[in-house]
Image 1 (cartoon, helix red, strand yellow):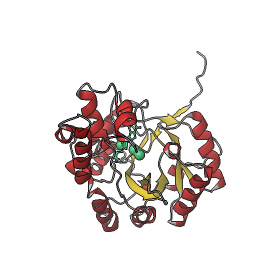
Image 2 (cartoon, protein in one colour):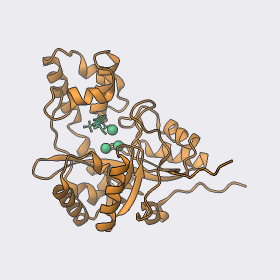
Image 3 (cartoon, rainbow, N blue to C red):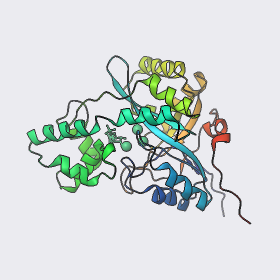
Amino acid sequence: MPRRRMTMASIDLHFHSRASDGALTPAEVIGRAHEREATLVALTDHDCLRGLGEAAETAARLGVGFLNGVEASVSWGNKGQTVHIVGLGIDPAHPALVDGLACVRQGRIDRAREMAEQLARVGIDGAFDGAMAWCHNPELISRTHFARFLVESGRVKDVRTVFRKYLTPGKPGYVAHQWATLSDAVGWIVAAGGVAVIAHPGRYDLGRTLMERLIVDFKDAGGEAIEVASGSHSLDDMHKFALLAQRFDLWSSAGSDFHAPGEGCRDVGRTEDLPPICRPVWDRLAERILRPALTE
Ligand code: AMP
Ligand code: MN
Ligand code: MN
Ligand code: MN
């Protein structure tokens, strides 16, 4: 049999559970990663740590290496651009992180009500209750829950299209929001013993100059890593950000950004192999990985 070249690593350091806008419970999503032969995973729910206990327990039971994680929402730069910062290897009980994220979560409900009002003005009624019906953690009502409601109601064919038509800047259901500052979010992650990572940089609509400014601000705040392999990245993106990681001396991370089966193009548990010029962030985090105890 011909030897197949391995192009996917069994590592996934970015995905979601029902604690935020994922569709599976923490135990289910870790179980799914395990079925897909993941050896090292991090659950990174938006602005929320409540899934981590169950995820860590499940990972330990299944023999999967685990890092406590989070994905913090940040507003950055003159235009208040939304940027996501993943924290890996955090202590989920650290007060600065716990209190900081509680502040970030505030305001999501009010924003959701405003989104629903805007949608009602374009003829879409019941969006607040409809989105809430998809949401398992009311503190974490997100645009994704609105998207699922709109697809379920038959108005739009898929989540991607909902975002394009309704939930992005300039569209009728979009409400701008002030998240954490970059330096606060990175500061909480570092205080909690973690490594801060710029999530899916290929998704931000920043030119080269602004992207470099973001990286400089991020490093000034204590950030150390960037996602090179991401479910949101093309192969071109991956190589572009591998070069940026090298140039700015950042560790490289890899995550699917999985949310739900059949939603988005990547499943949980596997990511593209990092290009050889990258220094994998899991080498930096070796001491923070929760390894299952060996049983006799
Ligand atoms: P929020 O934090 O409520 O603003 O929601 C952000 C979430 O919406 C992201 O974490 C993604 O899960 C989802 N999202 C944002 N943009 C898109 C898009 N273009 N297509 C699909 N999902 C998206
Ligand atoms: Mn999300
Ligand atoms: Mn994100
Ligand atoms: Mn994510």
